[in-house]
Length: 164
Image 1 (cartoon, one colour):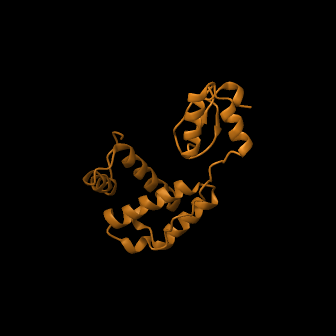
Image 2: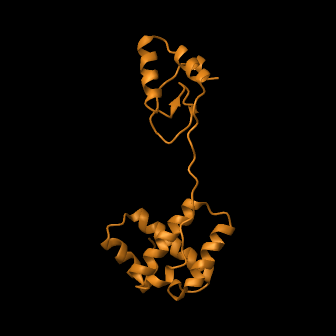
Image 3: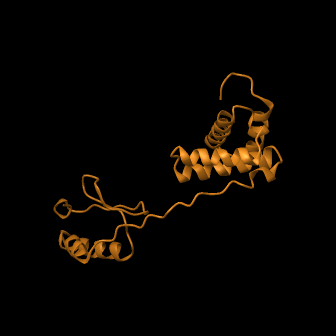
């Protein structure tokens, strides 16, 4: 952190996080979220009410903050008020924002056929058949271009003439 003196509130938050084994990066993110609340309120965050927290969450949504960031902020504020301040009732209006799940792109039968026909030999064709049949969702061309998107981080090389 910095050389400036640490407020007792921040020191207590840091101690609470250290007791629970939070990593330095997580501690930095938690401090940042509480600072954003303080900037929004224009006063110390320990003076916030349940309505202030609700207004802060509405502010985050209205300013285009993405659902994962809002949900992380909700988690931080719940920790801050429940653990550090021992005021769990203050967080009663905080809710997690729904995050729509993105479905992976599924190849058409023609695309699968083209993929298998582009395999240089029977061994490669068998490997691609098994990989696709098992649900492999990420395949990269030799240039690293991803053409099948999904949540899996697994990758394999595909002949360049297969990628259009």
